[in-house]
Length: 447
Ligand code: NAD
Picture 1 (cartoon, rainbow, N blue to C red):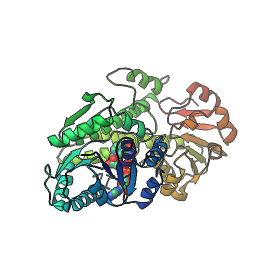
Picture 2: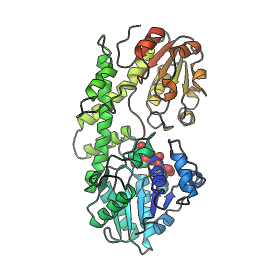
Picture 3: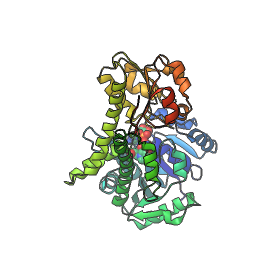
Picture 4: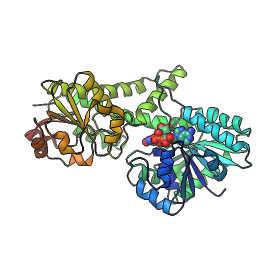
């Protein structure tokens, strides 16, 4: 095996992996979206992710990466095929496996007339048993070949965070190799040990495919659970004079058994993974006649948190019908233009539902993406100052650095009424509350 890598699906997971692997191995990226393929071949990342453009340009210039819509070409040329297509939620919350199935079928058909051994690595998040019982079987059926003999399969979960994806890929906490096939295990162990030459060997661990599939869901559920837990304590804190959630969670997080990460109280979690993965796991658990009460509570608390922000806005403004409401931050978190399941969408939709007169949104990176989803239901500003001009209330929903730098004077200068809701706890409470009508999640309000 020479180590040529095929990546099927060039979204956040696929393209980041492809570009990073291309620093060391030749890579072929495949996507059904020909615009994405053209952009990658031009050395331009089709979405915003820090460091990705520079790295893509570098590996493109070295000739180590190419993109195509032809999956057969990747199967023919490569030794490893990574499947990283989307696995969205269906309406019921059940995982939608149609893209994974289509790719497995196309890999199988491509393999039919080839005489080669290839390793297929499932990277898209899938519920336990999918990789073996669905992906493996579909490839075997369509290729007429035998799993373990002509091709091997594994599930290797991806843990990257959007906004930090390149660094996370290059410096992972662990590599989990899910396979019971000894040959696949050895090949992948070698591939990863070679790629991460400085990486401690004991952080590359092997387990069954199904355990690895569940690791991914358990990790995401736990992280989302930490956020929901912080939001629950924040809402309680708001009822107790003198308590500040930021101090509380800092104190809790200093316990090394707990850690302060993912403890930020705010507008709730969103993004392409946490909500849909928890929904998929809940649905999966129910197919096993198991009621996952903690998972359900994590989602319920998250929905209530968004509604809590809307209630707060409605309580503060004299009339929701006439107020000009400015939303600072639309993407689900800073460092990304990704709007999937962003809390801003829930909050804005509910504000509109309750009759909000005028909503102006501004995001340093996600205005275009937001426009595709929200259309003309809100207005969009090109910069913070325009967004704040004439506003009766401003609400920070995403903690972009650009917003962190704003001073009370800048809000006062632009707004019709200087009323600010800090739903991400980015401002100094004493400084802002002394100069503005200031509300912060996780603190009892005085004004
Ligand atoms: P994405 O939607 O950004 O990208 C998926 C890509 O697959 C798209 O470019 C799409 O055009 C392409 N595609 C769809 N069908 C295809 C086909 N038949 N052949 C080739 N390409 C096809 O998705 P993403 O955010 O990169 O997530 C991919 C998977 O990784 C999901 O299962 C997700 O849960 C998981 N994951 C995502 C993240 C994250 O932060 N985004 C982190 C870890 C794991």
